[in-house]
Image (cartoon, rainbow, N blue to C red):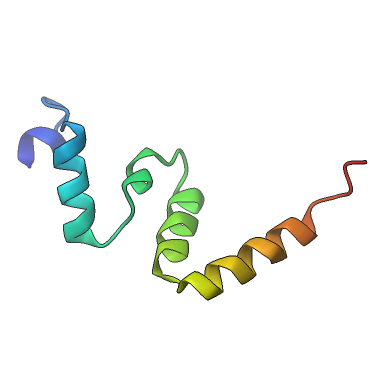
Length: 67
């Protein structure tokens, strides 16, 4: 782990998946470009399927009309 943290080695996809499982975060959490996006991804991951669908509908409703 120390080598990954110091940037000497880059974990492969399987290793990243195992780390994500241990930390209870989705794999894409590691690829977020901002802290806000990482927090959104982590929070979304913790929701139930029903809550995720409801939140997605809310997000879509917030978009301006694109017609």
